[in-house]
Length: 236
Image (cartoon, rainbow, N blue to C red; front, top):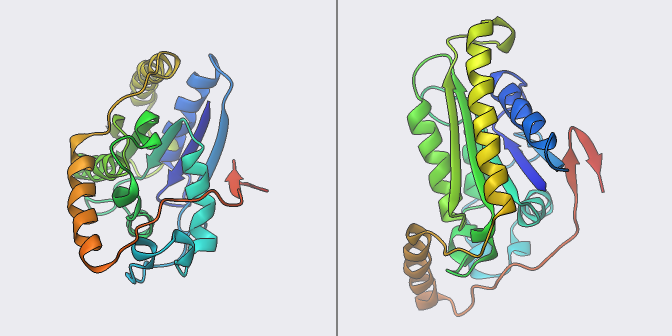
């Protein structure tokens, strides 16, 4: 199983540790290849909203050389994980930056998109409030990309650091993550072609009509050079 994980921060705290617990459960049953990206380290640029990626090829984007590493990894993955702790009741500004740069994926993914065959997972932890809004924002963006099967994990831990979380809470988290890993493995081993979510169909049809009125071409993605970070190591 190929897994791509995008973290909304470079800080390896509670959300990061929850992801690692999940990976440990999965790799006990199946071989996995994990590629990790940490924001803003792996994509430090703001979207310029020039719409060049929509009107022309994606490689006309000013940040293509940086974002393409992430895009290629996402396209080759079986499981895509967006992991972001709660920042002031919302996703981090770094995660928002990434979602802005990849917004064109919601337009070019048609109803028969290969993205619909992938498994999505959003993960978030918080010391207090904001979990529901944060995970719903992440789920919505995965749905816009064309992913139909999306799982969610969230936990309020009431601590700023993972080492301060009490053992009872960690045991509960481990149990939830074990059950979640079983669901993911069951879906992966029994996967079949599925339809893209209705929200993606509506979004694509609306935006395609709008852009065709002013621009004659919205071109599909082309494979480019693979370049990614695997467990913090730069591989090429």
